[in-house]
Every structure is written in C-alpha cells, then in structure tokens.
Length: 442
Image (cartoon, rainbow, N blue to C red):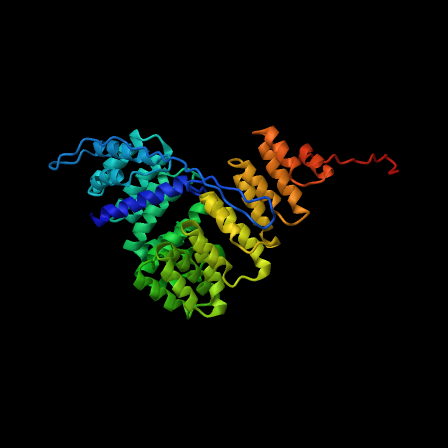
C-alpha cells in the first residue's frame, strides 16, 4: 500500500468525522437489564444486539492502466464509494480503491478534478470531502494557492470549512512551517469562525512542532489563552510515535506548569487510545501529585474504548467526596455504549448512597428500552428525597408506552399515597400569583 494512499484515507476519515460525528456518539447502544428492587443490589438480564447494516456501493469498472486518467470517471467512482459513509458505516477497502487513483493526479489534473467537483457534486458533505482530499494534495506543492482556493469556496459559518482548512494547513505546515507561520500572523489568524480558528491553530502548530519542537514551543507564548490551548494540543499531536512522544515528555519537565500539564494531558489521552497499557505505566511512573490530571485525561479516552479500565482509572485515588460524580460520569457515558455492561459494573461497586446519582442516570438511560428494569433501578435509590423523583421520571416515560404496567409498578414502588398522587399529576408549571398593585401603591 502506497503511503500516500493511506494518508489520503486518513484525511478522508478525519473529514467525515468532522462533518458527521462532531458531538455525536456512533457506538451502538445495547439494551440492558434490571437491578432487583432492593436498594443496593442489582442483577442484569440478557440483552438484545442491534443488527448492523452495511451499505456498499457497486464497484465501478476498473480503469485502464495506460493513457491519461479520466478525471471525470475518477470523481464519479469516488462519489459512489463516499456514499457508503453517509450513514456512519464505511467500506474502507472500497474507498481505498476509489481514492488511490486520485492520489496520482498531477497538478493540472487536480485543477481539473476540482472543477469537476464544483460542476457535479451538489451534496455539501461530499463536496467538502472532495475538497479536503484534493486541496491537501495541492498544498504539497502550493500551500498558498490551495488555501486561497479553500477560502474562496468556504461558506460563512459552515462547519464544513474546518475539513478544508485542516487538510490544507496540515500538509502545508509540514512542508513549509515558516511560510504557514507568516501567513497565520498576517492573514490567517482569524476567519470569523471560532471553531475553525481553534482547529486551524492546532494544525499550524502540529506542523511547526513536527519540524522544530523548540521553535513551536517558543511561539506558544505569543498567543492568547484559548489559542495557546489549541497550539499545545497540536504540538502533542505531532509527537504521536514512540520517539517523538518521549522527546516531548522529556521536554515538558522544563516547561511552565500550565504548559507541562496541558501537553502531558493531551499526550496521555492520545496514548491511551493507541496503547493503554504503556500509557498507564507512564502515568504511574509520575510523582503522585502529578498523576491526577493526566490520569483523568487518559481515563476519559479509555471510557470510550475500554470503559472498565477507564472507570477504574478515574476511581484510582479518588476522594470519597468525588466518587458520586465519578460514578455518575462513568454510567452516563458507558450506558450509551453498552448498557448491559454498565449495569453489571454498577452492581459490583460498593453499594451505598454515593451511587444514587449513577442509579438515577442509569434508570433514565434504559427507561425507553426496558422500563421495568429502569423502575427497579429507580427504586434502588437510597436517598429518601431523591427516590420519588427517580421513580416518577421512569413512570412518566413508561406511562406513554404501557399505562397499565406503569400504574402497577408505581403502586408497588413503596411510596406514600401523596407521593404517588404527585407523580401521577406529573410536572406542572407553578402558577405564580401576582399581587395587584394600585396606583397609590396600596
């Protein structure tokens, strides 16, 4: 596999993520199971798996190996493969077949391909992805030209601008970091879109750091506070291999505490995704007073890939006052990925009132799929003041699906008649009596 092809696929997947998954979880949610009604104990029943459907575009006819490439046909074939990613499911091999020939286009053919995209592609996400790929290639030889083209095609306030900006800056900054820095200071510092601006800072400093780590760190001080954070993020991203990571971590020892902590946290987060065992070993090698912020960053990433490990890391050394929030945080994220496993984990924790927020969160997360189990979790809340509210939340969600079953569960919940009456009435806007004030104030 040609390295250039791989880079293009990575760029494509990154663009897709920016376009579709910003702030949206894509992991399948598994239905989960109930705890028993006794406060403090729980059992979890088997779960159903959602079937997964993979959409695949038909393979286009194979191109001839001789002669000039038919750019129009290349774009048409790539559009077929790109369509397989529209719903969040990607046929990577198919995309490789479509993208690989695009990687071989020369400068004039890149211009031809951009014109073809402009003429034939109407769907905004697809257009952004084509622009990201082609402009990234253009930036290999002409960064300023590619950026000028990208800016001309950007729509004010569109989140798709980010894909184009990142693609150009990422390539250009690696090729000519000094030119990118000059451009950034003169005309690229702010395009009016805060999100695009933040990601652009990260891309610029990733390129600077890849070429000269010390020079990149020296320039961080010239930025405002928010931009400094994104710059440090970019510097950490540029040190993703073993040697680069170690060089950066060694360098952090002599940095101001703010920069040192920010870089270490970003490195720990990235490292936890690629090699969690090694990341954990490094974290535990730090002095005890330096571990917590780094541990939290790594744990947050692990909650997405290895939730049990992430949860354990968050609880490691946690003070009792912080545990209720940690339990709730773990369950909130984990139950969206695998509710059954999250429920099993919750039943294995020390069963005390510190779990109440997590129990209520878990009950809400499963109420639509398994209201009977959710009601059992709501009843397991130990705090006498919170339990009725938790039961009421599940009851209201259940009543819309099965009023008879919801009513029977409420009657068996062990609440007082007044509490059940309040729950049945549901949340109502309180009528505020406004006193009448006469003109004379009396």
